[in-house]
Length: 473
Image 1 (cartoon, one colour):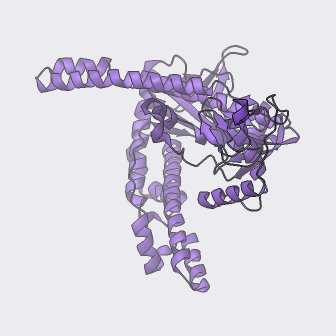
Image 2: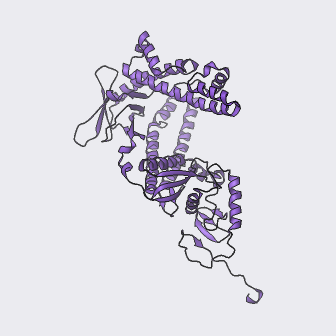
Image 3: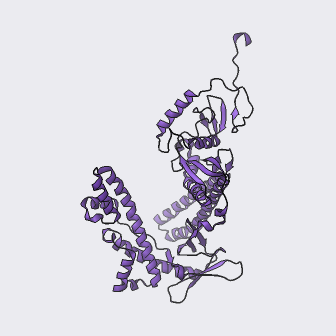
């Protein structure tokens, strides 16, 4: 499995950055031409090599003013983007054809035309594709694609940081870029220029990572996502305990900054209306820039990803089968939690958590299974009845147990694996009916008269108050 790594430039000379930026600007013109000419029906049956040969024959490519390898790689990348855009539209068309076409022979014929990019031959398919495939437009003017054999890496001292040599606009005069890493990037490189810094994106084989050689555990573990902690497993252990602090600090800091920026932007707009254009220009140049903001946002995202992936590795250390709820579902009830909490939960990185569990499990040889998440944090694992959720506590009204909500959810998630009645796509109303029916069949009529901590999961048993008869009052 391939993963993408990013290396950043360190103390890059401004002249080198300007030279790379000019090359990226010219290559952006190549992308714009490709999208304009071949981003519609006219380029559906063409491949990048056909376009390349046509440009070489008529000499059109020499008007871009960039090296041949640079525009060829940019052409290939732009054609790949167009193909991905077209495939997304074809996926919608396939669903429409499967829903509306009754005859299986006709459906198979239409699918074959879609797969071979010959949908323009059929009026019905052509109409559907034109409706769903809109002509795109290039917005990328800050990227350079460097072929593997055109990049060179070296170090000035043993164990020092890597330098990257990439072709420039002038022949035989490469641009030397110092990197802030000791790991040399390899393969085809994508250089992205942002805020005076160069980002070097390259693919890395996950099997070569040291973490991929770590063995997984030998148990079956259920996990539940959280805000304060990244993951809580069915043993009651919390993983990624710093996630909530990172998300809260990042959200609150961003809110304060945006308030100050909005005030400065209002002052600049008022100055423009009063004719004080020099003052407005100074505010926009010195106070409303985005380079520092983007660098800090990148750093915060990296910290959050590190915390979540570390938590995923901690779970896989224990398990050879990880059972998790469907992390793509939206967070229910966010509007009832107040403005500040709603803002913080809006930045909840559920997608990163799902990616971490899936990637880490695959790399380390552990299985990863998704189950239905409906009511997992509202069901008492002891009696199966629906309880009352209050913050991070789950109060069971049936047996008097108070659970840590994430721990209870992790146990319920683990039990959902292999449940014959509740599948991944069972509607939540149906799930609620099944849970209520099970609770009625297994209801505990007499609570356990014990206020000590139980040994089967860390729940606390609330001893009910004895009823006082008339003679005992």
